[in-house]
Image (cartoon, rainbow, N blue to C red; front, top):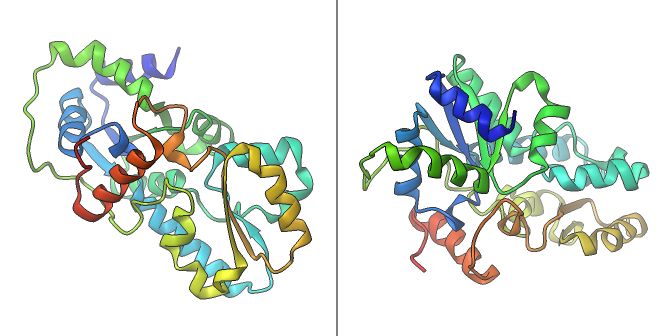
Length: 266
């Protein structure tokens, strides 16, 4: 059974569901429309994964304050974590695996607040499916890409009328970490530069740059934190996104939502 089929079955059975929207969602969706659509499908709760990103930042900051001698490579990017495990296991010891990814942190918050609901992560990354099923099976997270969500919409919403609420309410939201899907989003939103110094942070994105970044990290002990994402320019360029927007236009959508609560019209 595919993940789309699993969600369709859960909706058919009227299971209590929480939609967890990854911070990149404004690239594809107007916030008012997507919240209204998800509620029309049958999701009882809609939350932003930026809530969990704030917790990720808190955990990372506390760890680095408590362990100033440690050198870390960030681990929210499931693709890069698997790249390290399979291609460069010698770097596994640097991965900040004791810090929850935003998806995992959000799920834990959701399970505490809504213990009888199933978390459904909706985002741009295919490999998040492996993070959920292989690394955190006990959390029982159903992961769909935006492309897969569009398939669900195409099957259900034409026959399910819904009212567009111009001021929909998210059940959990956090504006301080809405820039997370952009290149350097973690470093910029966490305040980590204030803890370890600006020169101690290295920001990298794109799979073509990963090998070089690891060599530099290995050879330059002044780098205390490598903030790295596998997709070029970050999660805003994830494979689960369907968009004709340029990278600059995608960044503008994210920035506008972070500042104003709504993506710019393009």
